[in-house]
Amino acid sequence: MAMSHLILKEEVYAIVGAAMEVHSQKGCGFAEEVYQECLEIELAARKIPALPQKVLPVINKGLPLKKTHVADFLVYDRVIVELKALDKLTPQEDAQVINYLKVSALELGVLFNFGTRSLEWKRLVKTDRPPSEIDLQK
Image 1 (cartoon, rainbow, N blue to C red):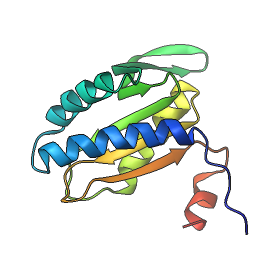
Image 2 (image 1 turned 45 degrees about the vertical axis):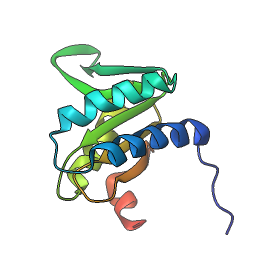
Image 3 (image 1 turned 90 degrees about the vertical axis):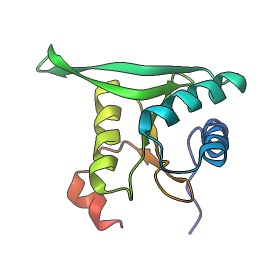
């Protein structure tokens, strides 16, 4: 079976490289906000276009809600980047990124966990498949 084409492969590679540098400098144990600021500095140093704390409006039946989502970063105007500093990632964090993709109409998110000895990260792609079908693919 051929490997499917990875969308925004080079962009994700650059983002992951910046996050790996932050993790190698800071290690684990800091609050998420520390990693956020460090990654903002690292992305800028690498000339990777990134908007921190990107507000994502939530629409219901064509009307914007008062409640919004705030993604840690919008990178390259096309990739949602979410940071965590947890003992381990759970499906809840995946769902958070997928919801950000839904409200932003973007296709790709990258989730990082700085809370472990080795940096954890994953690509999350918005699909039109229902969650029950997605769970069966694991």
